[in-house]
Image (tube, rainbow, N blue to C red; front, side, top):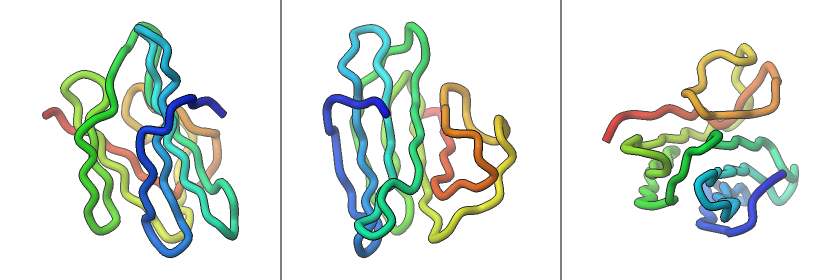
Length: 115
């Protein structure tokens, strides 16, 4: 697991938190998003970034079950939190630059729009 600087911690439901961590690596910044629970521990980890991409974590907006923020470029990233894992095919459905473990279920659904 990577991440050096805690940028934000958001309680998304009773005892469940989303942590946003950056690596503090100039010109190759990445963002690690961790969904964790006081009872279940780490539920899911997503990493955003890539070689020679740099960004600042900023403009976090919190709504019902959705977290929106800016990180790399002009993109606005959106994360929706599910109560339980949903079926997901590995390597499909995530925006470019998103990495996660290859599992058949996901709890955090991540999308992006141009800002």
